[in-house]
Every structure is written in structure tokens, then in C-alpha cells.
Image (cartoon, rainbow, N blue to C red; front, side):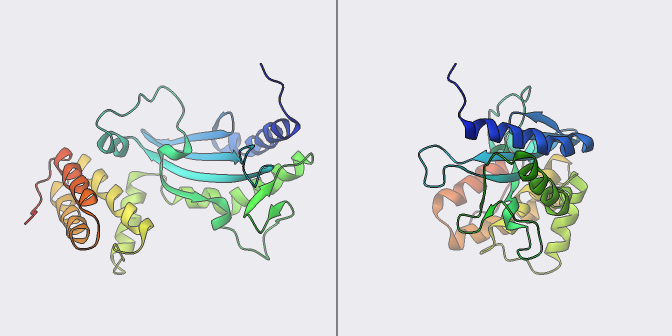
Length: 230
């Protein structure tokens, strides 16, 4: 086994420091990734990602957030991977980086590199871990808790729907819309799911490439939804 570098050791120590807080609210640690199941098949994911050795930002790390929903993965992939392992951040939806949520000039950013928008890895691992913990408490966890149940996700979409969402230009809104479709269909509300899916298909037909439109049609088919494709 190769000997760990100083940066790798520091990163492990930062991850352990962050886990001191996360374990108190129910997260399980898997290396530098943390999982918390808030209802069956719905898992909040936090990940500390170190920049690779060959990159220009080697020596820095970022914090990734996402929410995994089992039925969304089952529909998206016809043969989803087994879930006897932990969930990785990129397996989830509503993906966000912690730095996108913070308020500069107000938050503690002693170890933050403003140019790259990543954090510096260093020997002061306790202080770095404390900075990340504070930001997770203030922003990261509240963001994840917006999607802590299927009911919350559907409620979030309903709130956005009432304000004329821009499905054509806002990727986050588009993806929330698609996740809502899958949840509704799996809960048996095919009528509402079909209405939403038809809306999505019509937008893709006008503005997106044919492959995206065909994928939406196949997705609807997997959900038992028949779309008007004329």
C-alpha cells in the first residue's frame, strides 16, 4: 500500500472533524462521503472532494451536496446498481456545491480560496473542519432539508409552479420538475404526472435536441405514461 501524502492525511483529518457534527444528526461516514436516510430510499449526501494531483488546484477541496431518491434512479436507469453500498454524491439529484450557498463578507472564510472557490487543505485541520461545519450548519443542511421527504420535494415544486417556473432556461427548475413527475407517477398520481411530463416533452420538442426529446418519451413510457408526440 502506497504511503499517504501529507495532504491526504490532512484531508482525512478534516473529514473526521466534520463528521463530529454530522454524526450527531444521523449521518454515516464512508471515507469522505456522508449519508443520512430521512425516509426509506431518500438519502441526503455530503461529500468532501479533494482536487486531483494533476490539476491546477491540487491542494484544495470542495464540498458537494445532493439528495438521492431510489425510485428516480430506478426509472432513470433500467438496471440501477444495487444499494447495499453507500450512496455517492453524483448518484443524487439537486446537486449543489456549498460555496454556491454561502454569503461572502459574512461567513467565516479563513481557509477559502476566492479565485478557485475551493478550500485550502492544510495542517490546521481542526480549524478547517470547524469552518466547514459552521457553513454546513448555516447553509448546507438547511438546503438539503428542503428535500428531506417526497412530500417536501413535491411541495417545493408546487411553490415554484405557482410562480411561473422557467423550465426552458433554469436547469435546477427543470430537474425538480422531472423528479416531481417520477415521484407522482410512483405514488399512483398518473394524471398529474402525465400533465407535467407532457409539458416537459413539449418544451423539449421546441428547444432541445431530438435525443433529449426521445429520452423524455422513453422515461414517460417506463412510468406508464402515454404522451401526445404529434
